[in-house]
Length: 379
Image 1 (cartoon, rainbow, N blue to C red):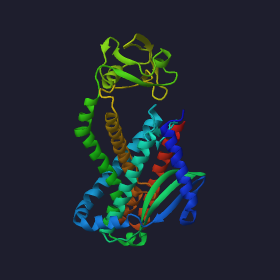
Image 2 (cartoon, rainbow, N blue to C red):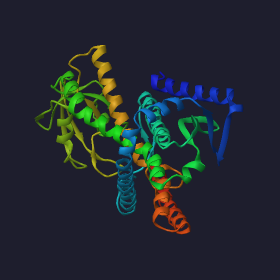
Image 3 (spheres, rainbow, N blue to C red):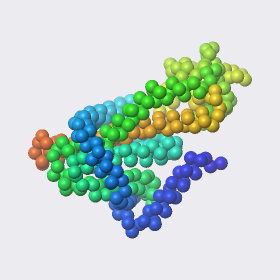
Image 4 (cartoon, rainbow, N blue to C red):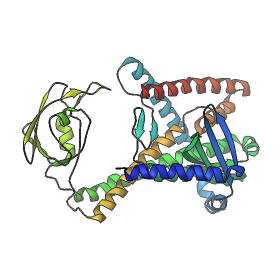
């Protein structure tokens, strides 16, 4: 039976395809090998950007310096993480630190359930591109267009958005103003992610924790061919004990398995019977695995409780993806925000020619690291 997630993904691809075909005369296409970007320009949202810029101009101008500082700190953090990840990839069995985030399961893909993915992506894009536009208007820099972009290969695949400032006037603006415009998008994503994490930790999680019964954990899924499945455990089984210790929550279950090694024996007690399982090594990192996914059973098995928990999960994904997108856009690479920040900063401290040479070298170096890590994730 086709899942709702799959139906949603097929519907999205169909809608994107129809929009591209119907509006093909209004769309500009850019091609790169088998891939293309279809850009549909509009004026929607520009008036809102103007209102936000004019009404809170005093606030945005005061925040410009902190935004730039956070942007460069984030750039340093993400460069350090990329280099560290590359070294670990070459010297150990650690998995790549970079991956493609998509709403389907496949090797090398960081899977996010479709509806969480599509809602989060649109929210992140609105905040990211909107803040680029607002900051440009704060400095009276013209924003020519906003719009939608679709990345595809034969058929449209991934939706996106953009704002299009007047690049000529932006290039002539003071360096601080340029940096504030470039940093506003990714930093707004990082701040959004951090605030959501704070909200979830302080307010949401303590409340939703009361929705769960703490008298065992329920198996929600089994890894194909893993020890738990071979031992006869099935989804829906309720685990109440592990190696003679009582299991009340999923956190306790994970903690009790944390120090296990491949070849160790795990005695799992369910509400029906006990199973003896020999743990095996995880192919990716060699750690012991049981191959079972568990969750705490709901105390209140009602539609409203499930709705609240769904929204909580959405906020978690939105926070994680906001942080990820914000930090990735700060990578000092080519034409993305981090790359433009690096070039602008270099032009402020060194000759134009030297700035471009350093910028190209850094971009090529980090591009090689990114491509290697993404490729290794699929191997």
